[in-house]
Image (cartoon, rainbow, N blue to C red):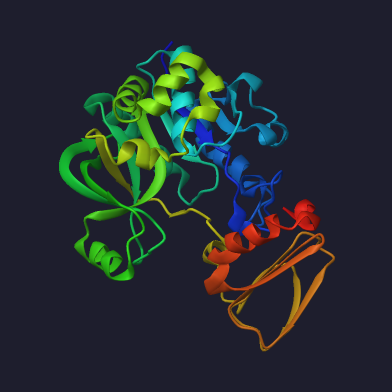
Length: 355
């Protein structure tokens, strides 16, 4: 059986930096964060349906405790297309196991792509043309293609990809693809500014397209501790495998990595500050809740109960989130520290129901 591209959505993440809205059984990918009423997972599935040519060729990989939630959010998804991990071991085992399963169904020459469930993408047509070009690169050059995001500022929270030799132009959009010279994880400010000025670097968006047999061959060589147990024992091997990202296990080691710079608008919606980027307007604040404020600017408000009212006086650059019996108040430049607070909460048995 052949197919142009079989997309897989990675939907097992925790989204801890969106706590308290994001919790164990209601992680970030199940949330609507832009006021559209569609969750991030639903929006990602919507985005990939044309490329998949229908629900029967779209796959989701998720954690066991999220299985029911995924099926509830995506009732059109065939149950056999939901790949459930017994436990989370980061993205390398998820990608390796999913690739093995899809190769069994479609043949090892199938082109497959992996896409996080929590991205925002602005240009649907541009996104689809990019995937067409990436599939062509993967097929013709036997490459493992990563989509590179054009950096808009010297961010220190993203990985960077340096483009090397140009492979040519691909797809109906004539998109250029390049060999990857190197990956750099979360550089310091000075290094990020140098990368931005050079014009040779992209942000690593965590989206990959490859031919199944090529990826499996490279995993067998560079990450045998992951692939070989899966080939021999399947899901029973999960508890014995190391926790590794696909970037660390494969992309930073293989010589088949290529980068396809993209032109569509993108955001990874990593924390509450991303919502401000997404919904920024002429108003002094971003309000996804009822709010009355005095001398309050640069703030973001979110409440799950639309009857709640948040009242502020004299606040700047603050995030306030109300969800049930939890209220979060944090300076916008410290939202990355929410994960640290959660570590403290996890040590308090009386707060277990808040996670």
